Image (cartoon, rainbow, N blue to C red; front, top):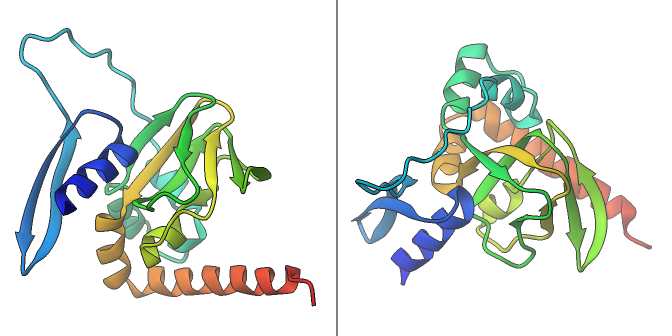
Length: 188
């Protein structure tokens, strides 16, 4: 059952037809590698040029500010490029949260309970809350235009935060700010 859930999360984050390598250690399931399924003798896949600026985009995210450029480069190397066509659902409210995304280009719509709440543009990010607490997504994110994002899975994000005090501190500050804003917006 855990392996089936892992495979589903990999497809949600990285797209369909994934070849995954996994292992159990001390009763815990770990993702070792995830890549597109390749077939010998099949038609060649059209190459989509990769963007060359993930560190530049990721370095603008508040979670990764106040870090030296070498650390930002190392973190950026963990992110995988994901492309979504206009109208495609990136993540769905209530679904499990397996990835954190940063938008490189395009626009995305945020809706909660079917009501549009915000539009995200390049440099905006989403998904950090669900991958911290393992809970369900609190909103649906839909590509308004063709969208290019950089994604980081829970399995990559958690050790990154555990081993980097600057990221952990920035994350705490970001979440505290959001909590204050939410409390301020509550009717009294």
